[in-house]
Length: 458
Ligand code: PMP
Image 1: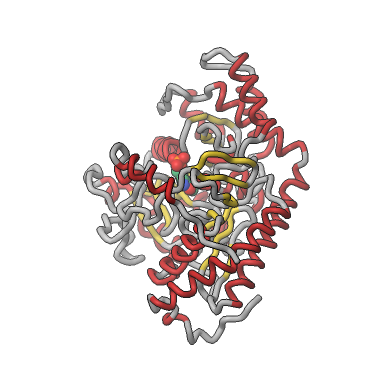
Image 2 (image 1 turned 90 degrees about the vertical axis):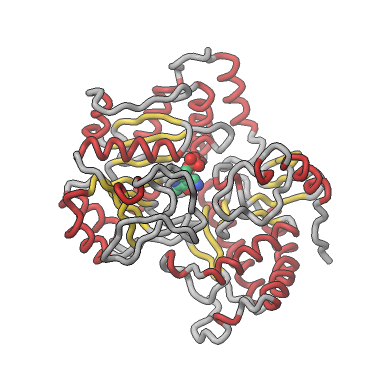
């Protein structure tokens, strides 16, 4: 019989921290995370231990950045070598090697620049696109996340005929203090995965659009895959209208292979951004890669890009280490993550079915989502409030039995995931689902799909 964890020391630490950190958290959007943070004291491979001595399976993986497992020895050796040998200068021997690695794998990578965060590189990509096209607006899609800058965080549209974005006070991404007019001046937002809507929007606004930016697989919206042929059609519409196509591969880069989603779907954007897992999350690094003609605006000094730490030695060493480790046994590393992921998904679906909670999993193997719903989520709009709450309840119940996953019900694999992790999961998930089922029933959150006729276990 599994008992739910006591988190007393974490609670005490959290109380102390709240005196200094707003909310006792390192970040917040308008609706604070209702889960009290857990304070970890140790990590090894896929596991973490907290201050109360509880053990966790880390499928949260620091928002998907942790990819080589906690405490990866080879990665540590690379970092130690870099610390001992690279002076703190602009360049080190790794720059050339890392650039060549990205160029080998990432189809759009003709030229490359380095930064520290995804947020920052998204803004650099938009600036390049505006300068290159001499147009001002960009199209983004509902449910896609591209960082927290004023011009790209959240926002809502009235309908697809009026897709200009305004501030939405009900959204989790609502914020005061935004520079006035940036959303309205720059952003057009439409549903993703619908080529007719994009075509119509371009007919009306194409002459004003510098860039189309998207997650090529909409991980933040619920791990939604692109419809067959959708990315190809977006590519050709962008060519037709002279628009820069930007793939935000901050999550899909590395997680879907070293070439990202663009290599998997064989659709080459003009620019792309990667971050998070490219350095396995131990130090921050992000990259902006793209066509030589557009990146050439940096060569002509028509567009600026700056940052004290751009290309810093430790960051470069972390990328090099990550690529070296993955390249050393590429096929079997990804194959292992896929089969572990398949097993976890099936275990979760079966366990939920036994508890009478309709649940589906979807998305790429290494970054899939679960949804407490009888149907796969095909669009961001399908994530109703009730569904979001059910997912959150299950996530919180899993945490109390040692299974960590990401907000918006995502589970991330890392290369050390193994059979022992699967049995850890199997032993605990039943208890978590039993608790979740009680809470969901008490809150009457099941009503909305209880009669859904199409719920079949697959
Ligand atoms: N793009 C995507 C797709 C992301 O998921 C994120 C972060 N979750 C970002 C951009 C922003 O990256 P960062 O947090 O490194 O600024």
